[in-house]
Structures are given as C-alpha cells and as structure tokens.
Length: 88
Image (cartoon, rainbow, N blue to C red; front, side, top):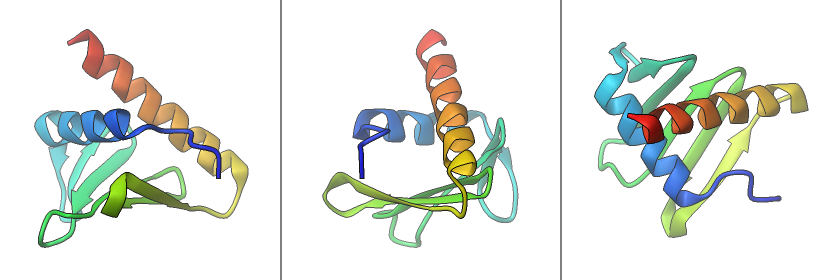
C-alpha cells in the first residue's frame, strides 16, 4: 500500500483530536474523525467516513474501508486537521 500518511501526521492529528475533540463514548470526536486507543495505549485508532484506521506496532497503519471514496474522504479530513494543528 502506498503510504498516504506518515507517522508524524498520524501522531500529530491524534494528539490534536485528544486535546480539542468532544468526548464521546467511543473516544474524542473532531471534524468528522473519532480518535481513541486500546487499553494499553500502544495502538491508536481513527474512525470516520466509513474508514477504521489502526496505527501501532513498528509505526505501521492499516485502513479498513469498502470504497476508495471513503478512503479519499478520510485522508482529506486527516490532512485538514493536520493543517489546523500546524496553524495553531
């Protein structure tokens, strides 16, 4: 899989959502993306636009989605949050 996201972006967006997101039963929600981690904090997740992203061991990630449009929309939301985080 082509690396659409780098580790720095993923971690920066996760941190930003944790700081600025609205608490929900699933995790923190911000601009269409919910961010949460497993119980030990070694694996983080993003969920939104029909995509579930798992990021963890060896700085690798996996995207689960049904249609490429879902992936494209998800990546666009992550990029938008990253730009917002960089400008704050």
